[in-house]
Image 1: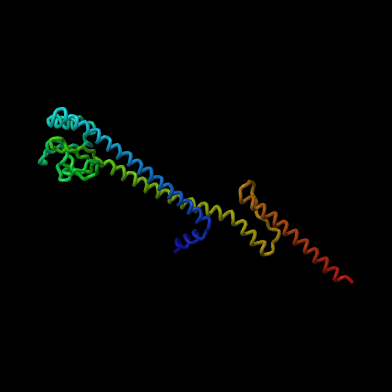
Image 2 (image 1 turned 30 degrees about the vertical axis):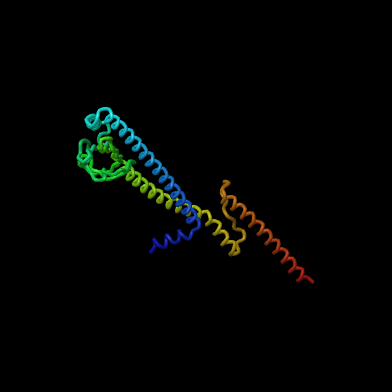
Length: 254
């Protein structure tokens, strides 16, 4: 119950609400920027995958055109054994009947598709399920060549960015709440001097003044302006009292 009362009291402060709103707006803006950067980064990564797959496919087709199926099978085997990104490269060569001739990818009915664009699909590479960016190409003799890249790296990057973003947003929210509370306390402390003085003046103590520390911040200037106003009001009250006393004295004098 005390906690509810505490938060209710904080929320009733306009300085708390304003600071909180601006802080949350900053977090929202930063989140949009992070999403934009993420989308651009993933888009660039996918474009690079597409470029590599297209270039590799063209190289293998050139090997097939120069030396036939045997040369293509040898090129695939050599590429998989050179240990240069071989764990991320995906290759599959099928004959007309769908039998596997070469590659590190398990055969699947989806490879009978006539789709010639790069697409994302669930595959089995070296007996391990994964996701891959694939391109299917039909050779002149009817064989099917599948060239691709393991895209599980994108999933790992997405998870990493997601966790980092969630942690950053949580930390930012905590910092905003802490900063809002500190700002509210500082503002309440500065305003409390003005409130105490006005309450004392309202009780009839016209000589009271607000303490005005050295400096030129907004509250110091406001305190000085209020003190100047109070000096003027006190002077006018003294003048009015003097005039009243003079009139009363003249009325009592024959």
